[in-house]
Image (cartoon, rainbow, N blue to C red):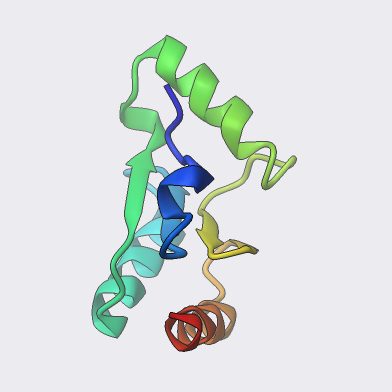
Length: 98
């Protein structure tokens, strides 16, 4: 089971976040997406079963080998951490490309 499937976003680049339910930086990133009115999908990796968690981490490591949270895929850009300015720029670029 793929948590983030780039093919799903082939016609419209999207936003996907690998997060933890207890992570302050992850909560800030989700709030920023909400404040920006950005549509996004996410998975709280710590809420998955052990097998699903292993699969999600393996998948996430393709985008962020350090496996730190949040890992945010916005179109073809990967942002690691709560990087407000970078996230805003990537979301704006994504909107302009549609």
